[in-house]
Image (tube, rainbow, N blue to C red; front, top):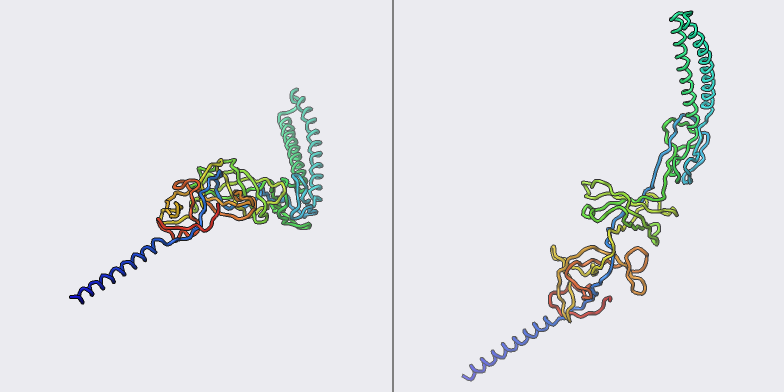
Length: 380
């Protein structure tokens, strides 16, 4: 009986020991502390905008062609030359065209003299016809010759005008002020009517072409501010205005083409430049911001972890537009544009958070609702 009692006591002791160990292990798990970094929810006044990329193009581009045939005698410009409207770019040998004008002038004088003689004869015979001293056939004959002489005079005038016009076209003029983009010919080349000679571009203002997603169409209108930067001048920001909103959406890309005009007095912006575009779509408004890195995605839902005491609490949020901000020395944060220090990407929180709440930005992947946390770093 004593042996039996001792066995029962031993079993009870073992069970108690195992139970105590298990409780200690459970307690150890629940008290595990996870190190995180946090940032506060920021409230800022920012302007909504649309980001995209675009291409710079000349404001105007024209191809100047020859309007007469001939040999180019002079070419006065080269690629890159600045030209003004009405400037003589080139000249075609005008020898034959001068001779044609001289022939036309001689033909005109002859036609005028012939008409003058026939008019005298007509008036003389008209008087005789009225006195019935001239037959009707003779009168009709001089009337017909008068009409022919008048027509010959008009033809001579027209021929002379055409010859003079051709002579004037032996000089090739610039049709606008700008820069010579391409010279297609050289002195001594034979050109025909319609031969392209020069391409001239006007680059002030410059045209910026880019596209807008169809979901953003209601946000845009003519006159909105457009800011852009180009790789050639990373320290500069250029400003323009939305000028044209094209009428149709591309069925393949579901985007709409738009155009902005950008002042280019210093001629820094060159056609063909690739540009990063920021189109502001409204006035500044107060919004709540958190770093994009704080977001966790669960299928179609988005959540963050916030700090309550020493615990992590998950919050499902609704987000809006993303903003890229730069921090200047001294802690002031500004929108990307001036080239300053570190760039951070933030996202607008439309619903789910309040200003000042501490959001976990590092370590949130290891968290769960109610997890005990320790803040080890972060930004104010």
